[in-house]
Image (cartoon, rainbow, N blue to C red; front, side):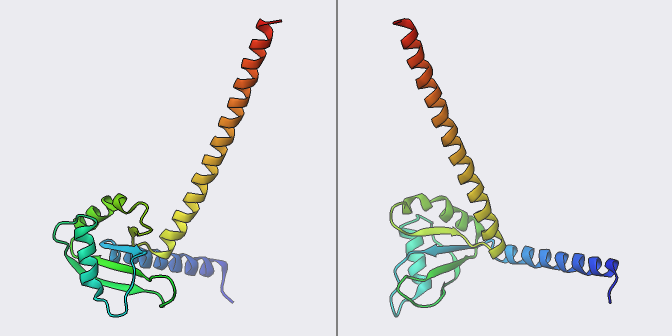
Length: 158
């Protein structure tokens, strides 16, 4: 049976190893983007298709793509594409120009690790809760304002 000190030391070491693995995963994905919603054909050359999409739609000058491949299983929805750039500035340009995709049901996002996705999801829920609370506070303030203006109107004419 392990002592408490041994157990905590082992837990700390495994936690540190998990952090190092997460850092390595983040570093490996730093030049990647994930494109979702692009239609899929049976015999497509993904790399040339993505290069053309980046140049024509996102206005990335001479896109230098190291790899591009679809992920997931073939189904009714088009599979997402992971694009690995040779140059991080081109990745950043593509992400900066993604506003042109608004309303097209095509999404371009950084390729995040599962831990990063979970952290973003938690932060997004916090932001939504804060926005809902702010809306409720604004509604209450408007109600108080209307009530006070009605009361002032009432006092003026009585």
